[in-house]
Length: 215
Image 1 (cartoon, rainbow, N blue to C red):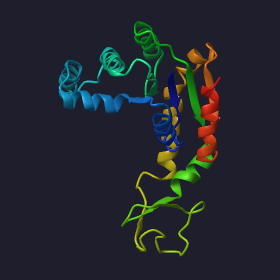
Image 2: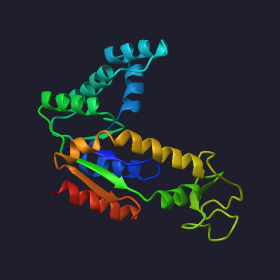
Image 3: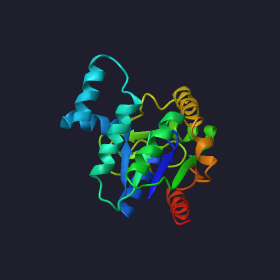
Image 4: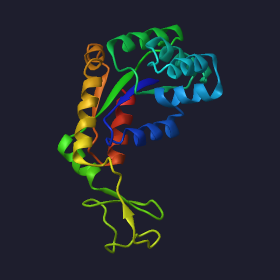
């Protein structure tokens, strides 16, 4: 099974992708991660990409397509793929069709974690962690049992990510909408788009995704 998993930062996409990897043996194909790995490994595609980036240029769609093709070729025949961060344009969506068809694969589902922007802002801006052990907390949903003391290690110092602020979150949401808007109609026309409530409990989101995959 081959799927595209969509969702803005903070929607829980990474958690759900990891659960799919663990349960179904699928491979998460993130273009950024693949690019770094190919450059590090010195593959022909990686070397070409390194040369392009050294010139300060953006990696072309053709190079990204070659990278994805390499990854699919290296996967076990029966294993599925989760495409993360690709495609982002109509041109890339067409390229993915060509890549998959050449390998006897099809795109089965496009799953979007649907979120409420205001609720997502509250979810993200309320996050903080223990500076000593890294345990995560939230101003509203998960406070320490004793204020100012970490439940896990007893530490008293906490920190927040500097980019966990309302303006940054809303900017990320706008960027996400701009990037997904061009490709969703393509897949909606094929009847393979499913939207899951990304604001639900993590286990409920997982169950909803599993229900989509079982169709």
